[in-house]
Image 1 (cartoon, rainbow, N blue to C red):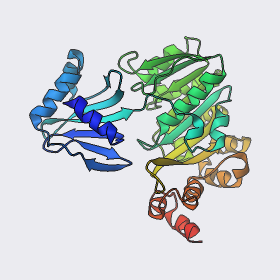
Image 2 (cartoon, rainbow, N blue to C red):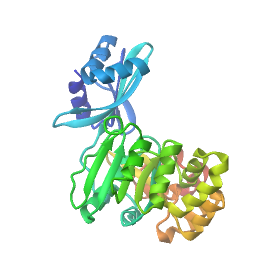
Image 3 (cartoon, rainbow, N blue to C red):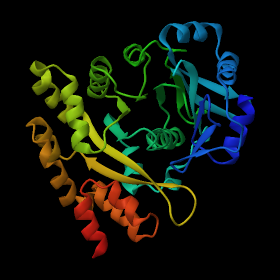
Image 4 (tube, rainbow, N blue to C red):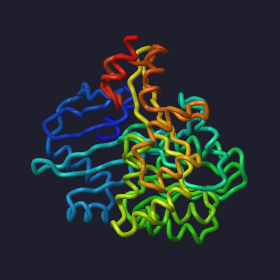
Length: 350
């Protein structure tokens, strides 16, 4: 039953599939949640589906925690990131389709400066944005660009492994949370002893992982990671706020020395053709930006971005405006997701 639902969702180019008892299977297609043309699922249907896709160990974990994240694969077809959960006393599932073919950077409508970041020898690069904003795709394309260029050792720590890489010029190892490592922090701690040049950390979600990622960047590695933040200023503050108050001045100094760039993404539904397109804010860590971080003046970051556009920096609102003027997105969508909606609305009307 599940495989049939997923194949039909694939035909609809769905990014996410939701299975909730009492409702037909529901797909998210270009950000819109749409019921599929299938019969409603019963509580027994969802219970049977989850029994079919979980291992015995996963079933025991789910019975204890009532929530479980894992991956599911239809051999020769597609992989999915799955969350099983309880709602109103019955099982529900949310599945995200994992696009296993890594797209080239040039195909993603990203600013040219993103490609330049793949030439960095060391430091910390953050790709941030809401869930579903394309962070994993951007990072995968960056890793693949380096895979085709260098002879280096790349280790990825992911939850779960999404894009699968074939070692080209680089040697790539991919480790999955749960299956290969117990936590990001544990995987990162041991990765530092595995002779890596480049480390991808799926998410800096706690103090230990964040501290280890910054340490890895300090010790000469290129570290790529994500945060669920919407702009560069918020990303810097989120990292600092993870630390106890007594350590925040120290981490500002460490971050000022290691951070290379913050790339913040927001996805828009295209109006010119089916599909999605990202608006990208880019902060590059110039000496002026490093001083701002060190001296806790992150409120100045938006002004620095505006005055350094020639270097490749750009604000989210300027990126959104460019998409609108190029006929790619609707005005109402542009204004709804802007950092400063009133200001952008006036800019688009000019």
